[in-house]
Image (cartoon, rainbow, N blue to C red):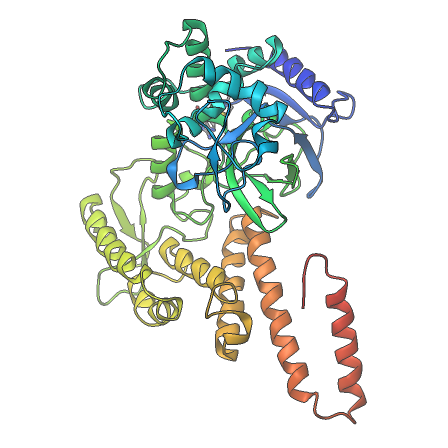
Length: 474
Ligand SMILES: C[S@@+](CC[C@H](N)C(=O)[O-])C[C@H]1O[C@@H](n2cnc3c(N)ncnc32)[C@H](O)[C@@H]1O
């Protein structure tokens, strides 16, 4: 493994080459060995909440290796339009002559694939589209290849499916050196890549994957101290979600903050091959949030049960009220029973889901349990946003319920000290839209009272507020 100082130098070179801020004097991060695993990014000095920590551009960007997100034009990533096979014979889909002849496409993957003799004939191939990322990596410069190789990667047969797909769809053999490097790239992507999106026509977006070297150096924590987002140009911006002291590790989350410890740890073991033992995972109450708590089965008790040792997947659970013990096996039975009920409900229309949350789910799990949080987050995402449930379709009670769920979800994130994380931002935005709709309704209800000066003044004031809210239409 490349030692931290050499890694930091490579990262600075990458920033310089990409014309991103790279002045080491102003840099707020540094690379050091981490107690969590391998190397990590650390705060060079105190960082204020909201401060930008770094911006990063992808070394390689392209379609994901997952059918669900395809097809798309290999050059501009448009998906909701007719696609035709590239006339140059590379076997990839394009949407126009312009895309077909773009130098980016020709130099990055078209020429290379053409030489390998795709076997899809006059068609384009969905499988070849999934191999574009490793093929693009062959155009990296020497130092960029060095940077890719310096990143951590998972071994094992599960990684490198793209190369199998490539070999299955070509007539000629791949050069051994190319194959070795592309295989490495696939493994590096599985360990470090970010899901990002290309924005098409300002309205639709398509899911892509990108390798952001600075982002790739951040280790995971289940209550992280940074957040990140991608702007329209695909640039990654990472900010402090909370105030961070000099010397602290700069962490991000690889999972969903509203999942419970068992779900998060199982996901991390399966997808990232490590067992998280962060301060949230080690605490049976998950920092007092009770996200993993279940109801005590003792009918005389109203307490909650928690894992004795959450870092042990086979641990027994204990009720914090009546102290009764429950084996891991019993917990599994309870959990799979609840999951089966919930999965059935998920196929129902959103209004039925709300009914279920308010009646049955309340009796099955504590208000703070992650299954409850997941259902409430779904309700927040559907109401006001999907066909038949647009803002105008919602009753006043439904608006009130949406605002209540937003508040409850935000309280849980605050309890875990997640600061200004992305999830909170998303929920806060839904809360703001709900409150705006409620206010507009109040105004239109009293608007008939034309002589009421106070009403008119309030209306003008509220409308002014909305007009200057960026990105929102009323
Ligand atoms: C994106 S890389 C992070 C940077 C990496 N530590 C390095 O030295 O290049 C992800 C890998 O780092 C390790 N890692 C990240 N967070 C961890 C954590 N909280 N505990 C243990 N290992 C972790 C795991 O091996 C994981 O697959």
